[in-house]
Length: 150
Image 1 (tube, rainbow, N blue to C red):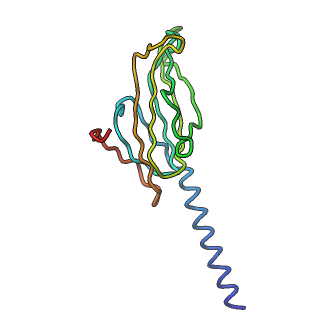
Image 2: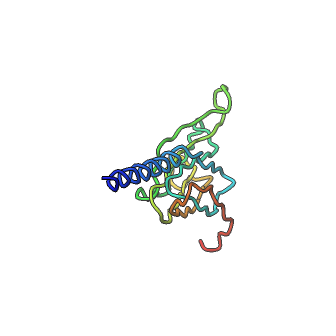
Image 3: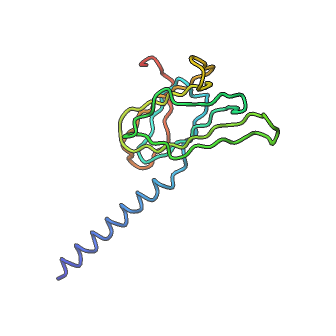
């Protein structure tokens, strides 16, 4: 009888620890990325989220779009929005995307700033290589600036 209670207590404690790890990962601060990391490689941990912020002005007809969709088995876009810098008509602002990292592996984000109805109209591009590692204990982002492997 004592062994059963001891075993149940141990299992309950392990469950609470596991639950705490899952919750702490979900509440981790997002990683913020902007155009300064264009062409770079980053290393992140699965379970983390990332917010990408790129400048834009939709009143010009230009918009950011994927050159190719990211691998949805590894990274998923959870939200997107646009925030104007001022209340002035025609003023620029920032595009925001939030991504979640689901599994370990390598993924890439490739976006172009273009007029979708015009061929070859991209005036800017954004490329980011993402290495997703198993999350040992909710580590912060590691940014590498070596792009020689691309």
